[in-house]
Image (cartoon, rainbow, N blue to C red; front, side):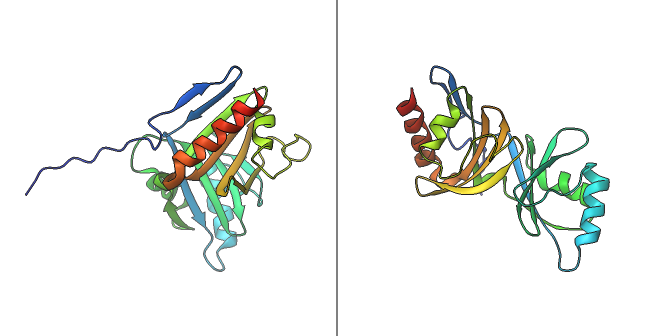
Amino acid sequence: MSDFTLTAKPALGGYRQNFGGITLSEHPDIAIVSIATPLGGETALVQAVTGGFGASPPPVGGTTLSSDGRIRLLGMAPGQVFAVFEHDGANARALVDGKLEGAAYTTDQTDVWVALRIDGQRTRAALERICPLDLHPGAFPEGRVARTVMEHLGVIILREGPDAFLLLSARSSAGSFLHAVETSIQNVM
């Protein structure tokens, strides 16, 4: 039998670029665990999330932060929340499962997504070229999350700060997604 060792690699090689005031970077250390509510298990899940994370489950389009500030819960759809957090290793799901104590169905989504952070003064101008959502702070405040499409690619967008966004898109089209965001940034510089 051959001896093979599998080594995880970032989808974009740990990409980081500064475009004169806008920084775009890949974050392969972000774990994403999907939390789904079992049929009839809403009350038990609310109690488990409150006890395990020290936070309430977020509404769809909203987010909450765990009491220790490490895990952000994203309200993705009725009955579906994503737990997003910095994590290096292969046991992200076990960490979430330990907090929920069997009150939800969980799936580790980490390797399915590429995570890009974009921040800087002209970030919103760059994103408005490719994102059909109204990203004005009054319409899309900090902590807001949504599914959308950018350049025909599915994207989850989270506003992390005044000029900072986390963008999640399919790992299988990471290169195309990066190119779309880079091009949009270059067009506003």
